Length: 186
Image 1 (cartoon, rainbow, N blue to C red):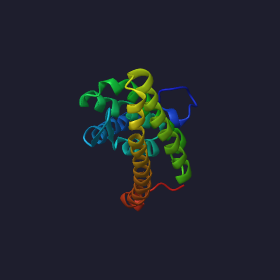
Image 2 (image 1 turned 90 degrees about the horizontal axis):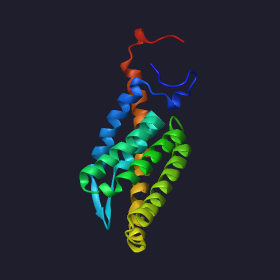
Image 3 (image 1 turned 30 degrees about the horizontal axis):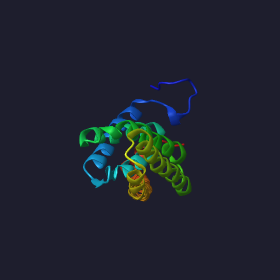
């Protein structure tokens, strides 16, 4: 069952599998964001970006966008940083959506392009949100920039590495799990 227009790209189709994977990845991103936190001057940095990129690259833009939006936002709300929840919902949601759109089923160079665009979105987006919406001051927002850069770089390296590892591992695992007599002949 697909929800959407006939002939719609698989990339943006809502199937039961996509919905189930989104739920699982929301939980994975939430745990990586909520329970692995390093405090910074006006918030925290986390390793949730690794899970966002991995989910987006393995399962596509819908899973990446939904889990990127909801996982970290729920972590903000349960960590006492509710003031960041609106920005997190939008910024990390776009990060996962764009990463999946650019890097899903793609090679290393497209994944690097995806994490570069996603990283710029996060660093610039949070800086502007802190200055224009939260009004925490230019000095504090500027002090957060190196920490946000560390977060997106570690997320990029970890996400791309895990994606490559999972792609190679699952390809070998699936070949071993499917007995010869059950394989379909092309």
